[in-house]
Image (tube, rainbow, N blue to C red; front, top):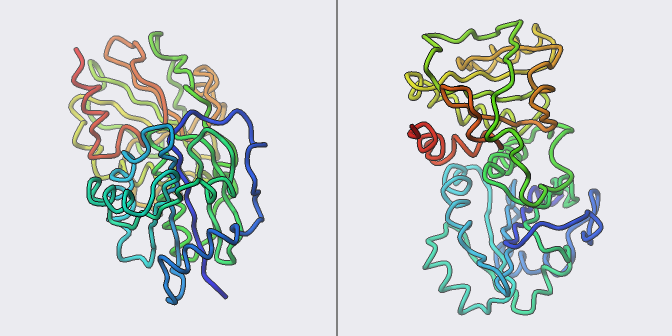
Length: 320
């Protein structure tokens, strides 16, 4: 059985308005033209890897290649020894231009040409970034449209899970990121914090620090990925940041889950979900950051803060 595990397609352009723009659905196989392209230009007779990530970008109307380096740094390099292949397919580029782009962006994976955009068109007709994931049988198990910083954590989590031969959780994305998702908390006061059950209590003083609140769940793959990224660098900001992650699940189950992973970051359980409901946040994971005066200065996907050695978080904490 061919071990096709993963296809990720990212397109640089505004987000789509509805799922009806997709031409494939969960449970479908890859279009035949894309399968043949991968066989002829990438595998060349070799067996398929355990996981396959393809960045499909459209260069005809938008800046299309800046994310290649980010994917290389965050996904390709750390997973280079995991039997995972990464490929980019660029609509609107011929092969000569594609080769130049590989050199310019220092990608760790090949860039294939799609001059007339026919490969892209066989997947969808949106104005979007897309993400499609295939299982080992070559059928789609994950679809996502839209891109915001932090989404790479979800991609990497899926890659690692499939490469390990494990089952994906049932609550990964099967929708889209809204265009310009509103940061409705930014500029207002942070909601009251309710932490009735501590799994890992916070250490040190809290007065005068920034407050980072993250909402997560044990069933949420991207939540786990994000917390794994954050774990080794939490302590670096302990003099400026009071960080707490809140689940609304059973305290005993969460405690066992956290202990099994060896996480030391501050984690609480709020079964009544009072803080998240007060913040009017519906997705997992989600987070907000408040300054020492209690004003929310950032809201979004928590992986955005921690990636690239926590560059975004460092800049936010540098504000007066």
